[in-house]
Image (cartoon, protein in one colour):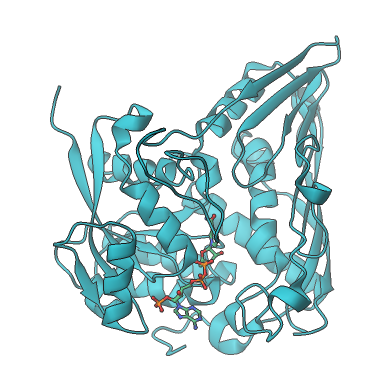
Length: 398
Ligand SMILES: NC(=O)c1ccc[n+]([C@@H]2O[C@H](COP(=O)([O-])OP(=O)(O)OC[C@H]3O[C@@H](n4cnc5c(N)ncnc54)[C@H](OP(=O)(O)O)[C@@H]3O)[C@@H](O)[C@H]2O)c1
């Protein structure tokens, strides 16, 4: 067996998702049957202090040789870093990603990619100019269950897709959870709101079934949307509802409809119940149901002939007895079970090894199109964030 190629990561920001991602990154790829690449963390940076970065590296069990930086500038100029993972609030993605791209680094940038499509286009142009890899970290798109889902659709099992409904709603009790209005979910200065944080997942389920799988000429959805504002902070939405029409020729089944919804007021399954699908992909011969829009582990096929098939897609990891735990935001999975963020990291690593400049399952044009849809919803609803985070100027001190 040949020696795996090691990818050297630099972690930009040290918050919740940076911690979850970095722990997953360091779980051995062999636990998911990946042998050609492996990952290590060579540096992390915190905008608050070097000691915060040192704490982060220890907390994530990174190699003791990894560098801790008290500024993002130092991280992107570290010659040992192959790729920078950006884990700041979306308000900061444009500035942080541009900083890394300008320094000639490959970039994996958290969702939502940017605040608006103009920023996304500028990042893509810069990545192409510098000939480096750039990908939006919509981790769910890289799960094996999603690869399988797309294969089932392509096989024609459910017939031409006529309608997709996708919801990511989590009742967060924002007045209690984010009482001071400063949290990134509700803070307009951090591009807060349900649309950019949660709606981007709902849109990704629709795009991976009705955009990614369609010929280019049908990839132009018409969009109608509504946002309900979160009263306490005004310029951030608490609920987003979007209707998309994908024009298709009659030979491909005619127009397809999609409904994407997101909310931080109500939940997709009230009380965390497990039997309420949050994604339904409906064709003429049946439908596919998914039961978690962010970290799906269950797949149900329901055909008009009465067939019902359930499949479990558990997340791998170091396994029972390893003493290893991961999770997000205080939640812990079973011992040895990963969050599932390693799939997108593997994809980025394979792209670097193969010399590809974008991801296979979510390309840069598609990330731009999704930002354009969210721009259009915000335009229709009159939601604009402060100029300093909507701008394409660089650098801007946020
Ligand atoms: N893929 C997923 O499952 C997932 C889940 C949650 C969030 N996300 C995305 O990841 C990003 C970060 O979310 P998070 O939950 O990790 O947020 P978080 O816990 O608040 O962490 C964000 C980090 O960004 C840095 N930062 C720099 N400037 C900041 C500012 N003005 N205000 C707040 N933080 C600032 C801070 O790190 P330093 O002090 O170290 O610089 C902070 O710890 C968001 O874009 C979000 O959409 C993705």
